[in-house]
Length: 104
Image 1 (tube, rainbow, N blue to C red):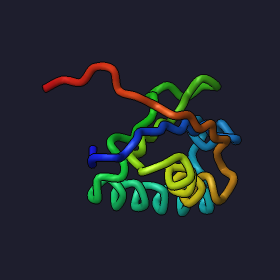
Image 2 (image 1 turned 180 degrees about the vertical axis):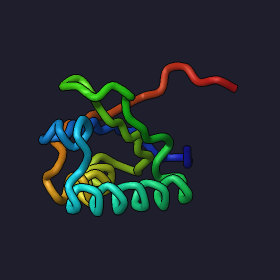
Image 3 (image 1 turned 30 degrees about the horizontal axis):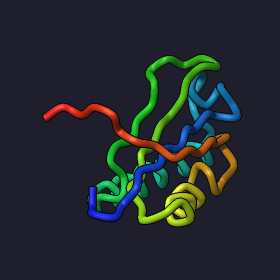
């Protein structure tokens, strides 16, 4: 994490669970690809520390994105530009975050 940078986390939940249980619509698949490309680019720049999702496909499934940013406004901008958030296909919750323990 860059000096002076803070961490934030956002959680994503699909608004249409069938996206996971029966498969995405063409629009959902397109946005999912954009979402992956967006996060991959941010991870390459060190803005995203990690991103992933639980492997269960029920109402408790959740995706997480940990963001490094100088302040909350910058982290929220990252979240708001996530294609899943912009498209409203996912509900989102945002929080300040601090890693307590890390391997290595």
